[in-house]
Length: 321
Image 1 (tube, rainbow, N blue to C red):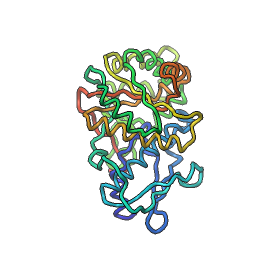
Image 2 (cartoon, rainbow, N blue to C red):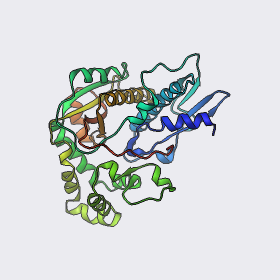
Image 3 (spheres, one colour):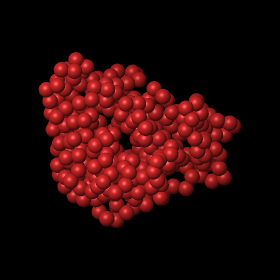
Image 4 (cartoon, rainbow, N blue to C red):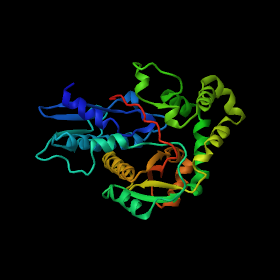
């Protein structure tokens, strides 16, 4: 791997992805460019069967890669090539000028996902408008209150924890026990601190989601108990934002562009001191997705809390760190 590509990946690798799977792969293409594809082993076929989250993540990575290239003074532009199972999603090709962006590699490094408590308070109108403008027409943005959406969030959590296949897929990406520094699992997935869990909560969740325990306990209310344990993250006066589709049905290119906008939105919020907390289960669960769509008056593509964390969130691991 060239030194330039290593530098680009180190910065762009901070892009967000569901379960922190980091599904993107980048390889040299031609004399001066790079090809973007994904690693099928890092997909979520149970939780993301339509690949909505996959293409949003690849779009976010695309924007991060272009921001990183501009920060390094490497003039690149992106060309979408489709979503073939065997070919690249996009190519980064040499351009006459660097990608125009107000963001830097420092912004990529400074963005945080925070799954713990937030300070009460609604997102100001001006910041909401700026966050919506970040999509540049690739998607819409709806704003609602945390308390109003709390029952939907709890229902989606119960649905997730009750499904053995979903739990098995989640378990694959949870890092709830110490992992040696050189082990591949130390560079991806979701750790207890990244999930804002205490040591006791971390051990309890690991035990409850083990195959044997989940098989027995889900019959006696485990899903309801786990959903209740996370109830507090929505029971306060805060803000939830929903990214809405401009066209239906969505093509991969639409989701890729929306993913680019989603990263710009999160970087915009971060510049104002806000963190985000993805709530994808609200869309993954069919019933709550339908209810959410009725509330926002559009098809939801992504949903997340936004606010100022009570405590500084833990930085998640990356394969390129």
